[in-house]
Image (cartoon, rainbow, N blue to C red; front, top):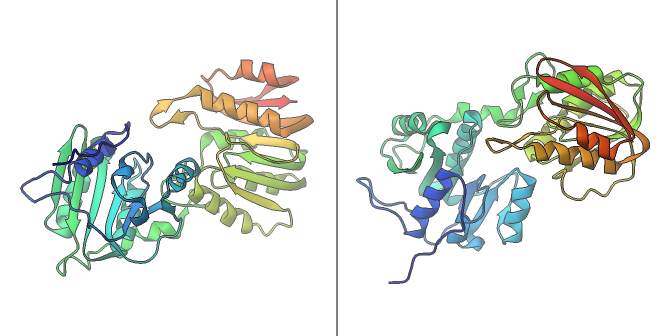
Length: 356
């Protein structure tokens, strides 16, 4: 018997369990084995780390991966990526996130693209709702195979005549756009601050003067809230380039800025801000950088955003950047800008204003 292939090391428990099941060709339970079609096409929603995907032939795989960093890695490995999955698949794998609405949207989309007799597989951490999703699967699809691992579960269901018309239409609706509270903006499932305005972005926008002018960049633009505010309040703006790692967020930003019907030129870049950016020097840069990597606070992310802002500015250009009140970015501003000050502060946030 040939040795089972071992996936590259992955950090998340639900992916470790999924990789373990795939490497053994399926683990027996009272309901049967993990069963992926031996030859048919496979659609994977948000595979993230590509190590476990090495257990499946790349030529059979299509991935929906909105993270630019992960999408680039997958394509480098020969896996087809798309932001608009279509067609029919014999197997669909949904790697669940911490966002329930996003998970249900992906499950509903996957089910609609699944061939009769095909299998839907979901991998989810216990802390992200594995128990409630298991109950939902049983109530909605009937017979469900449940594989339990350390802090995670993998669920499998086969599409049969009895469950083919499972009532999932309501879970597709958020993909059409989610209204952001107290604004005219829309977002999409699972993107940052999708249902209400982020207070950090709000204090940042309040600190930006109406006199801001010229061409600028919005680093980590999200769904475009800050850029929309700048366009509305600052009459001297001549152009904005928006950079965002999340494809859904940059789509929402394009939709939101287009709704302003402004004559100002915008450019939307699906790009990791920390990857090389080929752009002329900007007059100004604004940013609400992330400070989490997964579930961990990662201050180096914000520091890298400060350095990138400095690189992109012309001499004398301005940077407005918001940070959690506890994050120590002051030394980075000392090292990369001529001068800086705190333009606004609250109990939770501080806004830096720096001149290159």
